[in-house]
Length: 85
Length: 443
Image: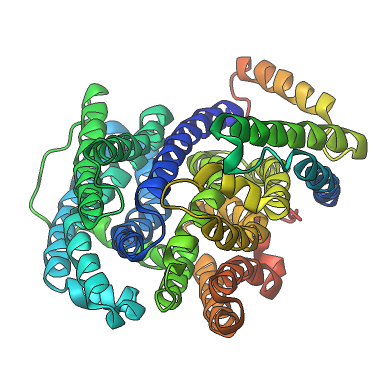
């Protein structure tokens, strides 16, 4: 479980990004900007956060995307073998 | 085990339910806001939900699912059906009794849950009336939990996953009706919602009964009897009631204290709804899918395989939970403003709700971790350890909530709810992996 601190680090870096992003988008993140604009701004903030987290997680090694891809393939292969876990 | 696919089914179903739940809460904020009527409604809504989480979902996930899964494994469909019919008879009998008693003693129950309302007889009376209307929802939900547990054990996650959405569909319909009727913000609106909750319960139950019939699994009513199966369920279920309901008990303690401050119940309700989004998608989905999986693996495969599944699940759920928790702590007010701030929901409400949300979010990872570990105990039919954890967490929660409420109002209650589950980890680190059967630990 060495990945947990890395996941936390990636999350905190993402949090910093969100904080700046919320500052930039502040004019649109209020009800007076209208429902469409504020919803779009929130969506942009959330999507940006997710992308940032993915990038930081890959950079810190918190999530090994190649390994997860390999795991999915391995699972698919194992399912064909009777008696596999 | 096909963890990813099952996780995806339950995750998607939960996500749909939450998105609909959002539509409902966004609508609800506009229609009833956070005034005294909203406070009364949320307390009334809390009561059947509390019993549902404690007895129906808590006890059933803890005790019924493992026993039923074993009956399927060992005796096939006929044995499983006999066991389910025994349980159904006993459960139905108990539920009707509990509902009848609760309807009669409702003022006492509401007083117990919201002593702060006693100062305002109008608010208190509204709450009692609405709880009476909504209480039969508990009966439907308990039977729904049982039917869902059966479907999940037989590897059918989809229907059981989508049924909770029906409540939100019905409530959104009722809110639309309130909107068209122009009764927003009145007590009448809250009563329409109460009746809608009650109706939704019967619709949800009906859908699952049809689903069970469709796979040729219909149960006949029997006379309630104290059979060995019922006894086993009680032995396993009673501690599970407490353990499975950690957060519920903690939230109830919060409600009791919050009822003394105007609008606090409403703020905590809205904050809790947002906090439940990541919790629902990650924590609950993995708990529901993990439980039958680990149960099977402990019986048929090596403990190492089960531990491995649990570790994967922890890593996977933390990769989703940690960023969600950080995000909700960094930009809570922004999220609340966009979602709820219109109609009866003001900017001051956003600020108050956002502060509570940040405090709740801090406890998210610990709570999800508990959701990942709990099935391991339940699958081993060890309900004692989670119960001890629940006890510790309750004491910490009550103490902190009482200590923080005077200074931080409703935010103090949210913070106490967050710290409580994590405290059980600190008090008992070695058992966190249920390592009794395995030399390898998860942390």
